[in-house]
Length: 173
Image (cartoon, rainbow, N blue to C red; front, side, top):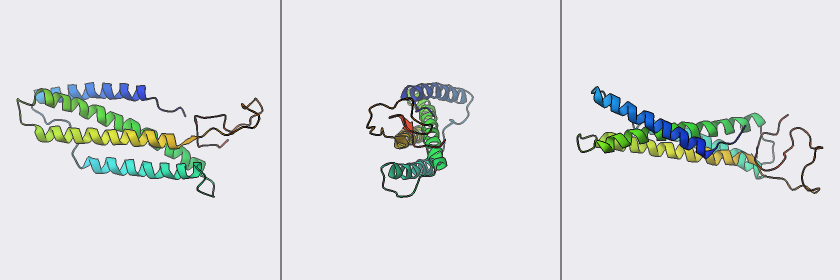
C-alpha cells in the first residue's frame, strides 16, 4: 500500500467543504434542517479513534521489539487499512462540517443558529482528531530502515525483505 499524502487529504477536505456549504445553502433555501451530525456521533468517532490507536500501539510495540511473539501480518495490514480509513473519514467529516460552519457564520446575524454552529464545530474537531490518529497510526505501521553491513541492498534481496524506510510492517510473501 502506498502511504497517504497530506495534499490529497487537503483536496478532499476542500471538496467536502464546498459540498457541505452548498448542501447547507440548499437546505436553508427550502427551510429544511441544517445537515449536521448530532453530538452523539462524537462518541462513535471517539470509539473509532481509540480502537485505531490501540491497534496501532500493538504494531508499534512489536516494531520496537517490546513483544517476543510474532506479529500477525493480517493484523498489521488491517491496522494500516483502519488507520487510512480513519484519516479519510475524518477528512470528509472535517470538510463537510467546515463548509456548514462557514455558511452558518456567514448568515449568523440573520438567524439564531448558534447551537448548530457549535455542533458543526465540535464535529469538525472530531474529524481533526480522526485525521491525526489515522496519520500517526499509519506512521506506526512503517518498518524502520535496517542496518545493512554491505551498504545498500542489491538485487540479491529476497521477496518479503525490507528494502529500506517507507515500507509497512507487513512482511509476508
